[in-house]
Length: 355
Image (cartoon, rainbow, N blue to C red; front, side, top):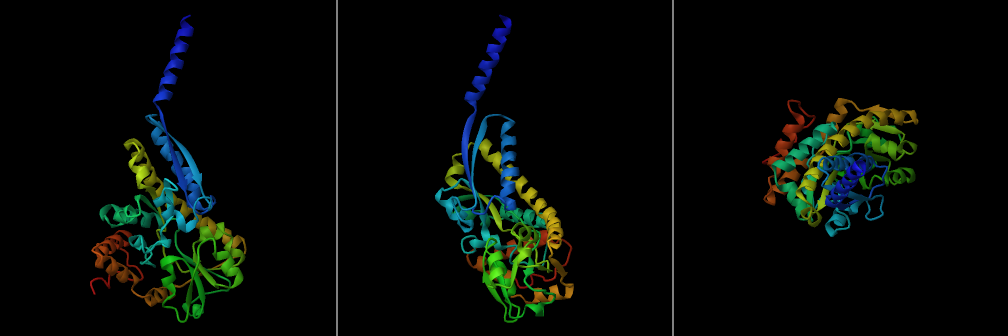
């Protein structure tokens, strides 16, 4: 009888705990396929991190519903999708939204500075916390900024033919996305061709472009070596291209404990993804050459010439924000101080400020 009583009490306690535990549904969206590294890590790292934190109290559980690869939105549609409530949390590819999220281009307007995804991700996130501009841009899109994602160690140039010097690119058609299209403006008669990560294979295969700017891990994922077997290691730099954000109405309705768990997991996701980006970059280089690709190292002199050929895109970016009453110049100086430290970059992007 005593055994039955204890057992009954245990079952009663479990039932009471289950009744007290609240389940919250969260819809996660991205237009890129599940095999894209940052999407994969959303599933394998971010979601378990949130669950782990919430399990410490047991007050809440999450019913995660993930929709990727165009099932809800296309790659460039996450910002609008979250704004409209088609998803609750999503990974916004910010390079598609330069007019709505101009401050997100802070690392893109400073090429040839850092090829360390970890440093760039942390620096951009710190700028977002120090200055209200970045968060305000997402707020205007009915969203809450959670964290920055840097999924690439550095942009490189993948080509159908061997490239070694800047002069080899004269008159070339170079595919890119967003701000990096401006990296070709100083190259004689070269033309930037707009495309996305999922387009580059076909663009190189059909001759719509002869070169494409992307990073080694993505080149391996999308089998670029088949159509672009030459990689020019120009080390254009790491760029923040992803931001994890949440629909504002959804966010405001969340319990504080759940908000805290998501924010803490978002920061951990930022650092984890950057670390994965660095690890996979080395692996991807090996996979690229194993697949028959050739890596050509661009000399420091040629890299310097490329950097010097660029228009002063950093000063232009800062001036545009300054004109809107935002602290563009201050943000740029603060960001570069964090990224470069005591090292001298190939080009001083603060030189044009205030002119």
